[in-house]
Image (cartoon, rainbow, N blue to C red; front, side, top):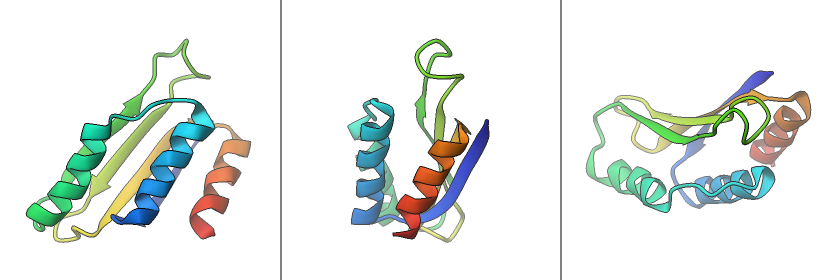
Length: 100
């Protein structure tokens, strides 16, 4: 198992990535949390922010799927998305998604 980590602009492309994560894994992300990410990008352009976007129970999916987001200090327009415990085919899929 491995992790996928990539920077993504907080814009419509991020929404597309969240939709693909939901479709690909068959999960539902917290819409309020997603909207909070966008709102905080506008309102607080200084602070570092950490988000736990999704965490599965071990028996729900594979091992334990964890999706986190990090906005670095003074970088309000970019979030680092990290998806942990991926299989190699999952890693290839998401690498292709963000490079498209």
